[in-house]
Figure 1: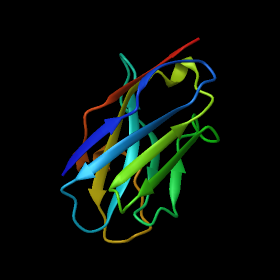
Figure 2: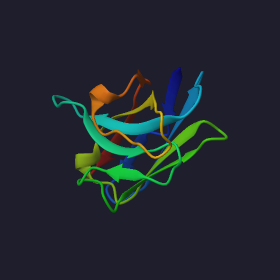
Figure 3: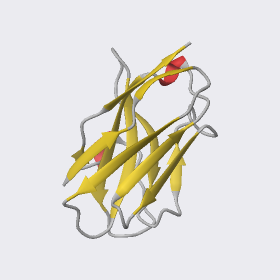
Figure 4: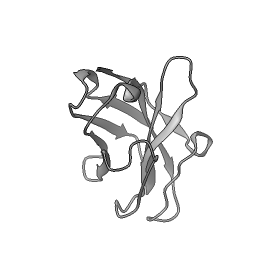
Length: 125
C-alpha cells in the first residue's frame, strides 16, 4: 500500500486548504486518518474516517474547522481545513489500515499500518 498526500502550502491565518491523499495497492475495506507533526512535537491525531465514510472523529483542536471525507472509487481521502491558524502549522500525514468492519475508525498512530510522506502546511499569522 502506498499513500501520497498533497495540497499543502503556505497560507495566511483564516485561509483554507484542502489536503488530498491517494492510496494505491489497497485491498478490501480500510480506515483512513490524518495526523500532523510540528517541529519538536510528537505526531498527533487530527481526523479519522471509517470505510463507509459515515463515521468520523476529530481532535478537539480542529473540530468545527476541519472536515475529513473520502471517495472510495478514487481511493482518496480529503481533509478540508478552514479558519487555519498558526497552531495548525505542521507536516500532515495520512495513514491507513485494513478493517474488518465498515464503520470503524482509529485515532492512535500505533493503530495504523501504512503511512505516506507528509505534506507541509504553514500558516502565517
